[in-house]
Structures are given as structure tokens and as C-alpha cells.
Image 1 (cartoon, helix red, strand yellow):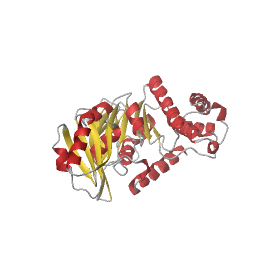
Image 2: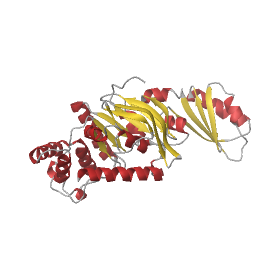
Image 3: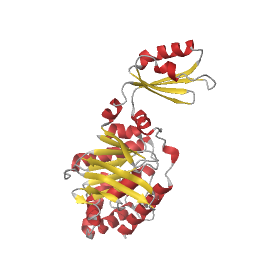
Image 4: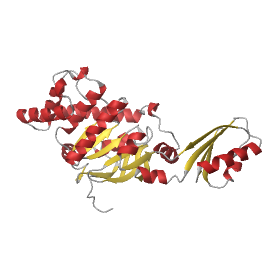
Length: 340
């Protein structure tokens, strides 16, 4: 592969735990300067481990990561000064005020007292936290805490921002407000944003390109439009009663069918036109003596893209795996030690 001139390069990254578990298995992609790049995958797919290797939190077993022109394994401390990381877990110190959180973070990056205070003032105003700057962070609402944590991640003016599930648990208003700030930062500074999210509507509307990871491997990469176009046409789900015979052959023989998957008594059909296919399908199934209990027609969406490439629906409530939790804890501990 040619030398990277982008913001982020992952080249055949591998991470093996305990000599057996390949959490990440040959991951390669690049992120362009100033881009919002989405990184999606089921829980346990390797998202957290990949982000940790890119942000100098974990050393890869093999392969390489290059961030802002720096090879991460060789320059971990230098890389950390070029990036900001907003963790899924809350990292603001609740027993400190908003201002104190920012000034301590600024000091950890070598800023003097006067410079730290000036930078804190700038960020508190930008994040609409000026009126709450002297309140303890533990009294902040969820949206206020996320804005404070974003401010802490930006205190050293990083060129690249890693956001790991940044809006998880926020209400729709809080999510919208958070992303409004991210867009302003990009417009003002040209910041590159690498984001993992459980909200596919966020990925669809915000990300210029997306990579999907499953079982430690990249299974699809492209713009949201490109990924949806790869599904080809509409998605129709035909539901029948469970005791009925298999209708796979009947449905597959209909014109316009690109592919068909059966699960229990439901048939998920990719077809050129749902409007044309549905009446044909209902008629064919009825002629076979089987009753249709439900029909759902969907235009291609990122939810359907995710299901197509991973075989799973993107469910927020699954919760992290044991590997994810271990990596998260390690990253938070490193982050806290770095601020002392």
C-alpha cells in the first residue's frame, strides 16, 4: 500500500488476546482529512479494540496504524497530543467544577495557568457552559456533561477527534445539540472526526463514509448512499403462519427477485420493486394454500445494510461484551492517569 497522506490509516491491523481470540483480524481502511468517518459493527465485532489501537490505547499484535502522519506504535505519546478522544463512559470528574475539569486537562498538555484559564473560557462559552462553569460537574445534565467532555477532548486543539458512542443515552435534543457542536468544530478547524455510534440515523446523515466491521473484519466500506445502493431495490418481508409449508421456492420463482432469506415463517426478499412484487407474492402464496399474516416493504436503509452484511439487526440494548468492557476500563484508566 502506498504511503498514507490522509488523516488515519489502518493497514492489516490484528489484535489477538490470550494467544487465541482474534478481536481484530486484518482491518484496513483510510480516513481523509476533515472527513466524518463512521465505524459500525455489532457488539464484540472489534470496534472498541480497533479504536484503541488507532488512538494509542492498545498495541496491535501485527499491522500498523498511522494517525496524522505518525506511526502509532512508534510514537504513542506524540499521537495522543494530536488527537482528542471522547469515551462512551463519562470521564468528567464530578467533584470538580466545569472550569476545573478544563483547566486540569489543559495543564496536563503543558499549558501554563494563564493559558489554561483562557482556553477554558473559550471552550466554556463555545459549549454554552459559561453560566455553569463554577458548578460541580456532577450537577450537570447528561447533555451538559457530554459537552464538557467534548470541551476536555478539544482543550489542546487536536487535529483528529475519536468519538466512541458519544451520544449513547442522550435524549434526541441532547444528541442534536452535541452534533451541532461537532459540525461547528469541523467548519472552524477542519477537524477529522472518527465516530462509532449505535444510532444509524446519525451515521446516515452525518458520516461521509462508513466502514462496517464484523467478527474482526471489515465487511463493507462506502458512502451511506453507496452502501444502500449495493442492496439493489426494495426489501420485502412476507410473514406466514408458522405451521405452513416452506414458500421459499414459490417466492424465489417470481420475477424481480434478487435474493431471499427465510427465518422461521418470515421471508426477507430483495427485489427490484416492492410495489410490483407484493401483489404477485400474495397471489402466489395464496394459490399454494398458505395465508399471509403480514407484509412489510422497506426502501434500503442503513438498518437494512447492516442486516445484509452482518446478518444481525443493530440493537442498542445488547450491551458490551467482556472484551469491550476490559478495553473500555483500560482506556479510562489510562486517560485518568494521563490527567494527573
